[in-house]
Length: 70
Image 1 (tube, rainbow, N blue to C red):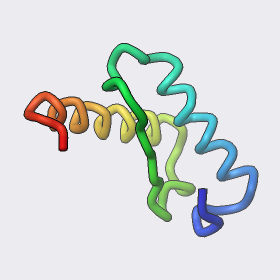
Image 2: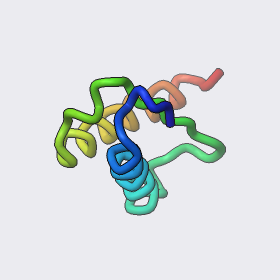
Image 3: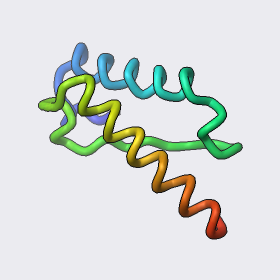
Image 4: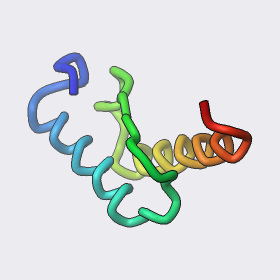
């Protein structure tokens, strides 16, 4: 995770939140590798806002893959 995201504790918090989403909802993720690239403003968001954003991004990814992944 790039340093532009914030300090080491901030980056670690975000990584933990992303891993937790994958751990709690493995059936929702398509098979294969998934890369999450956070944007620079993510450090200002609360944990709940990050979780909601990941859920929304996941839904968009699943919909896109249902149409035919590239």
